[in-house]
Every structure is written in structure tokens, then in C-alpha cells.
Image (cartoon, rainbow, N blue to C red):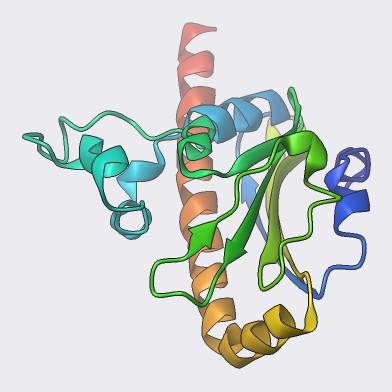
Length: 199
């Protein structure tokens, strides 16, 4: 991981994570443009990510009388509506999200805690999950975006359930990483093209 990720407090919280999945993509844009893309990309452009949005009143914004083109954008900061925490945000470099979830439920339940208590939180039967999305410079006008998702079952019961579902969970995690990185790359390269045309 880059030096930026090492500065994030989540690295201490999940230094003993059970497993993690990392994926990268090279982007024809500056680190600043990639960071802007991370924070402003519309995750709802992916039908799969839209499907994973929790159902019920909080998610009606997706479909109450709107078409796919009329729906409001769903940005990275909007995940806080669903008990996902922003643990760290280093402008121009990256962001770390965190959640405490029972992943194997039909409708995964999340525990809400203040971000400052994430490292110390211990909810039996749950798994701590972090997603670090960061960017590093490769060359002038070229960057690498990365997503590193870490999983830490908090007790033996959670670990047992996690192991049973990990084969499928890894496939889902890898697919979601690819979807998110693709959206970020397209958004960042669009921003780079706009900047070039204005220049």
C-alpha cells in the first residue's frame, strides 16, 4: 500500500485483519482528478451497486416515480445513510470507509458506532469491514487507483460463519471492486479531458 494508506487510523484498527482483497486500475488522469472522481462519482450508474442499496424507506430515492436517468446521484459520502462510516479522508489522496456487519444474513445488518470508536468496537457475531480507496501518481497525467477491502471477524462465531461464505464473498467483493474502479476511472478521465479542453 502507499504511504497515504499507512497514515490512516484504520490500518491500526485492522492490522490483524483475517483477510483482504486488493484491486488496482491505471487511469489517464492526475491524482487530484482521481480523488475528485472518488468523491463525486455516481455509484448508482452501476445496476449491481443500485441493487445492493438497502431496501425500504431510506432507499426509495432510487425508484419513487423516477427513471434511471432522473434518479439523484449516489456518491461515496452517501454511504453514511446506511451505517457505513467515513474513517479517514485525506484530500487529494484517498478515503477509508468502515462498517460492522453480519455479512451472512439474508439482509446484512450493520451496527452504528461513532467513527472514533470503530477500532475498539466489539460486537459478537459481527465482522469489521474497511474499504480504503486511494490514488498514487504513476507519471505526469497518469495515476493508479486502488481499493483494498479488509475483513476482521470479531470472534470465533463470526469467523466460522465468515469462512463458510468466503468463497462466494470473495467473488462478490472482487466484482464490486471492479465495478467501482471502472466508474472512478471513467469519471477521472472525463475530468481530465474537460481540464485539457479548458486549458
